[in-house]
Length: 140
Image (cartoon, rainbow, N blue to C red; front, side, top):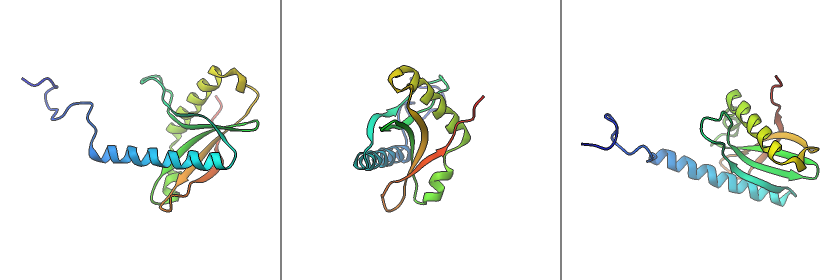
């Protein structure tokens, strides 16, 4: 008798080779972005912030600060840079905004900071491009 539910041909914790490759590519792109941010004067406050499953909050790839500005940065790695920008859905934006709000509540020392939401795009040339203030969350 199998220890997995009927119809499952692999363990639920195993990822497909394609998914593993995509995660590695994403982590490499994030590392490139962090290096670029540091070279341009940003300090990295957090990386890969993940909220508990089912909380409705999203993952924030990078939280960075320069002066009085705190940026919540979503990293997108695609072969085509325009496809990377289009890959950030409205649903993702809402989750990131909620996660950013939770992060700011846990860090009251950042209460007076200017907050913005950026996107960093990593294309074929592996040179991260920052799109500052790429979007603003919808206010209720």
